[in-house]
Length: 137
Ligand code: GTP
Ligand code: MG
Image 1 (cartoon, protein in one colour):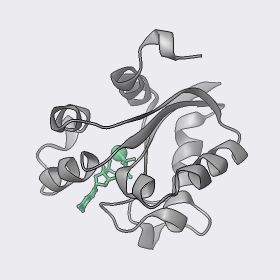
Image 2 (image 1 turned 135 degrees about the vertical axis):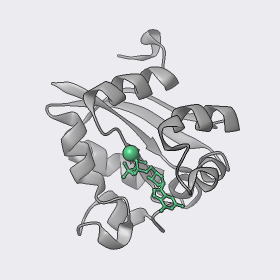
Image 3 (image 1 turned 120 degrees about the horizontal axis):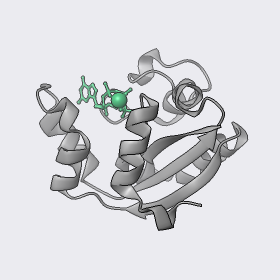
């Protein structure tokens, strides 16, 4: 068993998809270790996405991720990181497989409904960015 970190991004929260996305996550067998609705500051987003700060879309990404609330969660399942990325689908919803969360709920490559950690190491870093040990169960 291991863990991944996810955010339901501002587009999906705005569009009323929070419940449907959580239902997909539940149906796929993930256990919720920690969860909250929160609103990232510019500084939060710049820190969280620091790895992308040289990319041309960095400004757009920070603007998008701070324009409204998100739902952050730590999820547990065997093979969590890889299985969650399969569940959400490709970064660009136009390329995402049928039935994936991004295929169903994302708008564009930038406004793509959900985040999923890309490694066990990043899952731990990203989870601790949003949650203290006392918020994980
Ligand atoms: P995350 O799970 O959110 O990390 O997505 P990912 O791992 O599928 O993609 P990546 O880490 O490469 O990019 C992080 C985020 O930056 C994406 O999820 C998008 O929100 C955004 N992004 C990536 N590529 C583009 C792009 O070409 N244009 C814009 N506007 N945003 C992008
Ligand atoms: Mg990524």
